[in-house]
Amino acid sequence: MTSDIASVSLPDGERIPKLGQGTWEMGEQPARRASELAALRCGIELGMTLIDTAEMYGDGATESLVGDALEGLRDQVFLVSKVYPHNASRRGVIAACERSLKRLKTDRLDLYLLHWRGSVPLAETVEAFETLRSTGKIRHWGVSNFDTDDMEELVAAPGGEACATNQILYNVARRGPEFDLLPWLAARKMPAMAYSPVDHGRLPKRSPLDDIADARGVSVFQVALAWVLQKPGVFAIPKAGRVEHVRDNHRASQLQLDAHEFAAIDAYFKPPRSKRPLEML
Ligand code: NAP
Figure 1 (cartoon, protein in one colour):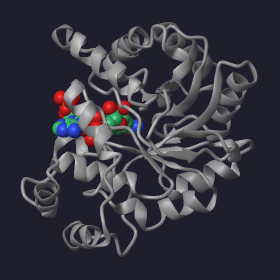
Figure 2 (cartoon, protein in one colour):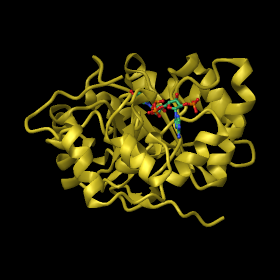
Figure 3 (spheres, protein in one colour):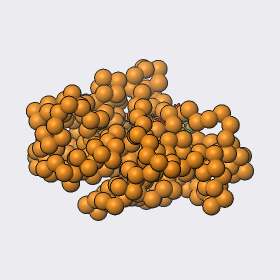
C-alpha cells in the first residue's frame, strides 16, 4: 500500500516515515490487549510503519505484544527498541538485544537505542552496537535523552559518528531542544525522534490549540501532533492504544498549520530564548 505519510532521512539516506507509533504502557493490561493489537495493526495499514518499543516497557511484556502485532507484517515495519543503560556494556548490549529479538519474534532490529545515558563509557556501548550491526542483528543504532553536550561526547568517541538519531522529549509544551539540540542534530543530518509528541496526553486544559482545533474541526491532540510533524528533521512516535486515536493521528499527519496558527502557538508556548536542560519523562 502506498503511504501518504511524509518521510525523513537518516544520515545514511534511508527514508523512514515521519509518523510512527509508540508503545510505552502497552501490553501491561490483558483487558486492553485486543484494542492495542488492533491499534498497532491499523497504524501499520495506514503507513505508520515505524514502531518504537523498549526492553524496559512492561518488563518485556510490551515487546512481546509488539512481536504478536507484527506477525506476518514484520517486513513492512521499521522496528526500534532500546537497551537499558545498566545493560549497555560490551556483553550486556549483545545479551539484551538477543532477549529483545526473541520477545519481538524477529531476527533483526532496524534501530537500537541506548535508552538514556548511564555509567558505561559511551565508546564501549558504541563498540557493542557496531558488533551487532556487523552481525546483522541491528541495522542502525542511536541514543535517547542525550542533551547537546552528551551528543558532542558521543560523536567524539570512536565510532560515535555513526549514530542515526536521538530520541528526545519534544512537543509544543517542551520546546527546549529548539535552542541548541535540534540545530546541532540538523547540522549533522541526524533527524530527531520526538517522543511524547502529545505530552503524554497532558496538554494544557485551555490554550490556542483549542481555538485552532475548533476552527479546523479536529482535536487538540491532532493540532499538537501536526505542529511536531511540520518541524523539519523531526519524526514523531505518538502512542495510541485505540484504533480511533490511531486514525486521528494519521489524519493529523495530513493537517497543515498555517503561519497565523504557528504564531498563535508561539505566543502561548514560547520558543526558548536560552539554553534549557533537556527534559525527560
Ligand atoms: P504521547 O504519545 O504523547 O501520549 C500518549 C497518550 O495520548 C495516551 O494516553 C493516548 O491514549 C493519548 N493519545 C494519543 N493519540 C491521541 C489522540 N489522537 N487523541 C486523544 N488521545 C490520544 O506519550 P508517550 O506514550 O509518553 O510517548 C510516545 C512514545 O514515545 C512512547 O509510547 C514510547 O514509545 C516513547 N517514549 C520514549 C521515552 C524515552 O525515554 N526514550 C519516554 C517516553 C516515551 P490511548 O493510548 O488511550 O490511545
